[in-house]
Length: 474
Image (tube, rainbow, N blue to C red; front, side, top):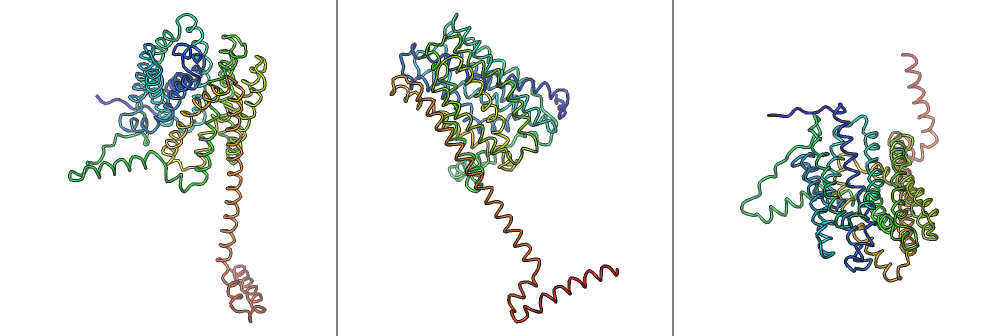
């Protein structure tokens, strides 16, 4: 029996928005609590800082790296099936991780499998939100971003409470049941009546005589469709933004993983250390939607790139303050200022990308960006853990390293954007000058005939005057 389609921005759109908020809290908010289990996992498996940090890095990297695969599944099966599949994979990964006996098994279950499931749930709901909202899309995205803040707030509190009573294995088992709620979020994603609703596309049949060549051609077509390498080569703004963001991610993810171990290493209690992540989440509940609304204003449209650069710079400078003191009051202030910069980065990241690339190529440009970001996310925590092992648990060097990546990325993007803007202005002025020259060929004629240079201006003036007089007479 055919199912009725929902209207764009109808009543059910707000139900979908609520499901998106919950899905973002369950998926994107989850990595914020991984630092709480860092010391317990390290003691359980007798591992170094670098070995233990591979778990959160794999988890977070898969949330970003699975973007192209998620877009393929959305185009083939729709958002509802994709989100529900993501909930099942995330739940299965956490349940099986509670029985792991080695860190390698934990990498596969709680890292790869759970991260891939969270990617499907998060990106599937974000995709369908763009179909349900058109006129109120900016407001819907701002409200949906509150889910991340709620997740950052609630996941550490739940983790700390369960860890004290059940240990990390029991906590991961409970997390598996909690992540099943992503399936409920996917179940409410009814098809929407829109001309841009993703359709199921059948792949063209491969040539029977040359299956290898046909397979390579199909793979090449899929890569060109979902990864915008052509835009990376020809669009200078996208190239600068991609390189700067990938470099920034090397320092952006480090404080979220090592802030709790850093506080506990300097004598802060377990509950207070977990409260620091909660402070970041509570602040983001109010700051992230506000930053999203500001980013959507037309008066800031020309300055979004520079606002994004300033947010990255503020994030790097804030980490320098954190490295100088581990007092709890200082850490609370650090978390509040860090929330401001995080909100700016989160709200402006996609807006700046939309300003740089055409909207019909936004999906492929975002896919390539998330793939490259996942590489930085994958190597940044182990690199920080290796630095921590070589410096005998001196956490200050980690935050110095984070500040270096963030500040250098901000300087690179800001300078490159300014240079590109000046170049574009000069090109426009040159184009306008060329157009004026082409519109007055009589001036070119005077250069070719210097003997008539004294008479030609008079002829030109008489010519223009005659036109005006003829128009007045008419």
